[in-house]
Image (cartoon, rainbow, N blue to C red; front, side, top):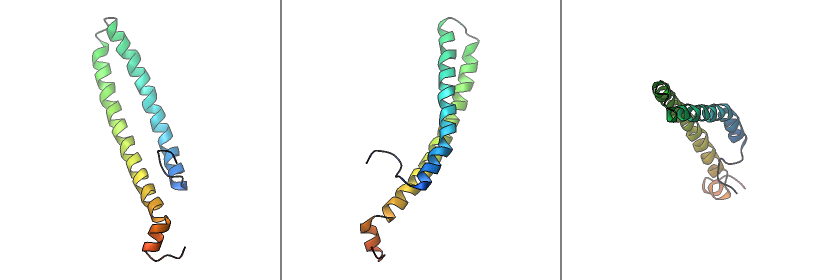
Length: 94
């Protein structure tokens, strides 16, 4: 068993929902790195643009982390409830 969301249909749906925002964040990070490279060449006009992009990207990352936390928390709870020990504890026949 690896680290990550349990193998449930909800987890797969969560992964699919998060794939696009994560890809967008990765693209933003590459763009920010390119812009930061221009700063090294003395392009000071890029400083403000980079600061604005980083602030926006921070908000995007926080939103994705919130979504991931919600999906993971729900799936971990479902996975725990489906264990043999939990089912026995609540009286569900095995």
